[in-house]
Length: 452
RNA sequence: GUGGACGUAGCUCAGUUGGUUAGAGCAUCAGAUUGUGGUUCUGAGGGUCGUGGGUUCGAGCCCCAUCUUCCACCCCA
Image 1 (cartoon, chains in turn cyan, red):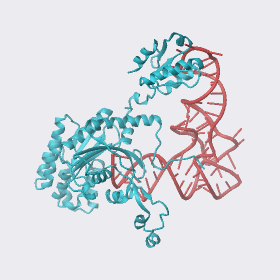
Image 2 (image 1 turned 120 degrees about the vertical axis):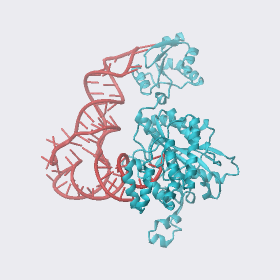
Image 3 (image 1 turned 30 degrees about the vertical axis):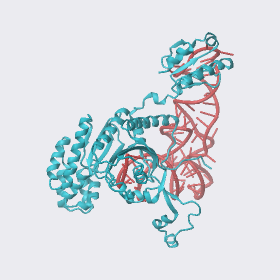
Image 4 (image 1 turned 60 degrees about the vertical axis):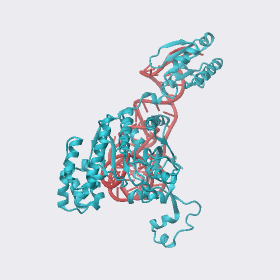
């Protein structure tokens, strides 16, 4: 056997990485809680019938499927097996899959438990998801999503709340972001005005790439998709919109004046912006090309990008009017946003924005001088623990150089020196490891000193 | 899923047209220092060169396969 390894696109997390990840999760959670969202969890695996067909054909391919237990070949269809038809064979050999995101399992949860739920239901969920994608930087096969959604209300106040949550989280983490906002109804309106309402997906996928491939690139792609030149000509004024949020929307309003749904979208987005203005959020940019792949969005579309780092979106979400409809529960409108913890980690790492305190596990290290001093040290240690101070005793009477080195490596801010003289006098020496200063403390003063 | 690049010590990398025993810096450990650390000096350990085959008298270097990581597309957090 060669050295052991882990599957492609998965990772181990060291103590330092865990400390940093927990800092991100704790920050996100604290804001979710402030806005009165409650946690739920769902299983890692779901029935394939729950997952399949919710993410498009591409998404189905990216689902990790789980082989049935026992002799999974016992019930295979001979014809499908002989013809190597993976699609048909799949139904026989696999009925479970790993969850691909948290939104679809949430929809399933709401349908299954709707009799016990009080609506509007505000929930958050922080769990890993799995995608059989080809890994790249910032792109993993197992990664965590932090979802916050509210379901059972179509109030635009909740769109504003999602934007506010995003704003607060990234503000607290110290990441400068641009929050992009669009509305699916506007995209529908655009397709309608172009006379190609049925091809909304092709059109939005193409214009979504505007900032990446430019106007010419978008037009080229639309031609390849089979749209006529006259249709593309009609689209140009929309690609060229510029100015402030309200200026863009006013221009667009004229273009879309014959599209009822388009005007509804503009009205919605204006109201949401109005709410965020009251909340004092000023980094929201209306981006009329923002589409995002997920076809279940019906209203607001939200995406967050970090300003100072080259990285895909670190957060995204939107309004979906009929997510639970697929599972038989109609008229359940929801809005939510998802935070990509792994990408946020990469951004913070690149910007060196992790606070030093996240690395600190131990507040004080008791220096070990030998068997007789250990007795006092253990008693002091216990008192510190009871006072809720993370403390540890060095395991052997090694040289002080070595013990101090250990404290330095673990970023322990204080060491406590209890040798023979300190033990006899009851005056322990507390050394500040960054300044090198030492002061004598009696046990109760020591606890007070280390308590904050 | 399609196309491409990389892989040498824990980390970052040298390694000539294929030629004896594969190197450096950082890190680790030990000593200089038996109650005071991050500096300095000295020394030590650590690699079947990602893995498996092939070509050759001889492979870290050439060929094939495979795995990983990275890049572009696709899609997305």
